[in-house]
Image (cartoon, rainbow, N blue to C red):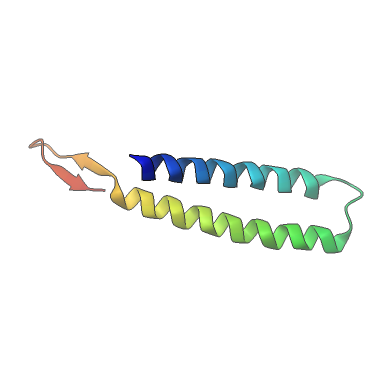
Amino acid sequence: MAEKEENRQGLEESFKKLEEMIKEMEKEDIPLEESFKLYSEGMSLLKHCNEEIDRVEKKVLSLNDKGETDEF
């Protein structure tokens, strides 16, 4: 249970950071170099989030018609 909570917090923090990066990139006065830097960091962070979500999804179990668990 602790690992699940840790993953959730990590993902929530990552999504919050992505939101902050987007707000920065939307500013009109942001230098182009800074925009590219934020974009690159954001794409790496998004890739990490997707990998983490995929990893967690593979651990999810679902009940079948017989009441047995199957991996998702």
